Image (cartoon, rainbow, N blue to C red; front, side, top):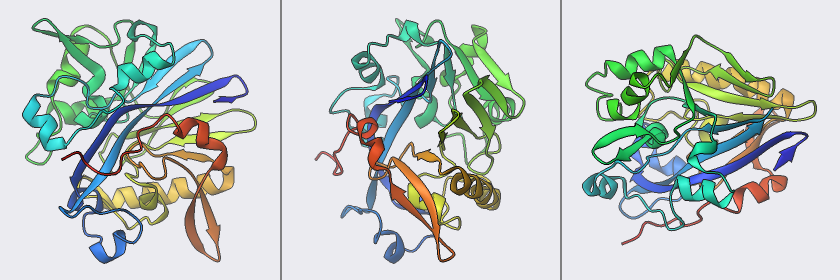
Length: 296
């Protein structure tokens, strides 16, 4: 989809099903199951929706999903389904090869957002996108290099260490311009060094949230936090700031994990914030997986 000379596509690395206690944390089941489907085994679907951006001659990929390095038992634990193929197949449908990507932006280094950064080449782990420079916040990289008891199950050196060794990892110090249409913006809360990606032209604004909000409802209801948020109260304040921006700009909001409402507007009516799907975004959504039940 084009916005002037800015072009974006949503590309999927598949879908997973996780226990609802992860994405909904302390939110009572009676509340969240009114707005989101819950399986009998208490799991909910989470999409792995990345974004391809073409701006000023650059092909930019935002996040890379789980990738292909996970062992069978790990894929089973994630309940990963790729009925229509992985991220590389989704890119290939757009005529994009791994060699075509100039920049990979990682919102953060949790494995479901950066697992596709690298791949096996024989016994070696190498960059999946061999020409690309990979951008991540320095604070995020430092946290990932020194995981604690809570994060060691999601920060894996194999997803970013080889990139540092190859000289492909660019560490950012705060908000950073990628092009005049694409900016990395620091959005702490889910992790200390989490970043989102702001997109804009003269007449249009968008924001790829990453894990600032797992589902669209998390963005509208700032007190709805996940069990994965490392700095939950800071995430509340981050969402409040970007809520004001989103309403003012009438921005398109892109949800990486929401299979029901992957592209939304935030609106305010009678003092209450709500989310609305964007009809014009349907061409972006149509290629994404629609399966909302796990395979048996």
